[in-house]
Image 1 (spheres, protein in one colour):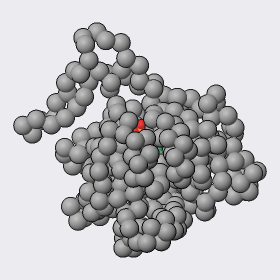
Image 2: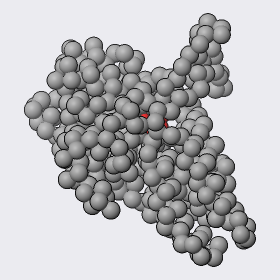
Image 3: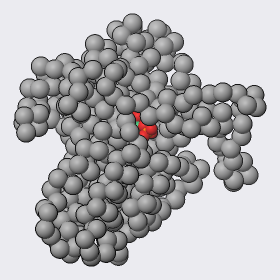
Length: 370
Ligand code: MRU
């Protein structure tokens, strides 16, 4: 997508040096646009943990590149595979909720043959990481095409008046490779001349909505308004929301959806107000091995400092200030689970399915039965 009119992806390999991974540093957006070079698996782990890269599909791709960089740094010898396995585990543990990370890493590790030279290993992991990046990009693009039909339909019903879409967190191109998941249909609608307006939940505590989604939409020229996290219900009661689209970090084969904390409350409000609540996700964000999202999806707990402090910009310096009584206790759950019964439909790269086991199994039987 475009930044100041120039096309970017959220992650890529340095065009002049295959051993350098480049990312947009999301930890300093929207205050600075900074490209950062990562050269070791530890750099990747650090970038994932500290959310320089974040969002389910992107951390999956970053994990794949982490394996590749680990191979680049391997020394020939007996311990090469053991070292690689340790890196794979450390990568997988860097963020627990988004299934994409462990899915992609396990997939790559399972493709590594027992007896192989370092040079072959380097070529293989490079190819697999690049394939993952291209695949995720294509998934996002297709999600956009399928989701566009939903927006078109609402726009038609409204006689061409703007379609008001509420989204939570950042399920945009920054969280993916390009296009996004929840935002992909929105960008496509906008590019097709359909009037859309986005209500952007600020998404405390890290404010991925007001910092990242707002920045992205603004760069692409999509009209948006930032709202406090608690405002969505009120807007829905007053007919100001036509549609909710969110992303997902892990969705079960029965259609329970884990996404950024606060998503569940939006689903409840949408349900109470008969507003369609769609979840956009690629197949890499499904965890087909589990059914019960509430009890089976691991929910990341992050530092309480993200709640007790807030970050902003003053005199061109990024600063952090405390916003609670000193020594106040805080707990920071990163995600919640929206039960399938509140999900109108799941927008995937293969089309839109119902959030139930029959529809999901029908759409992804080849992956489930592999
Ligand atoms: O903690 P984050 O910022 O990584 O959480 C991201 C989200 O919850 C997104 O909505 C989700 O990953 C879907 S991304 C396309």
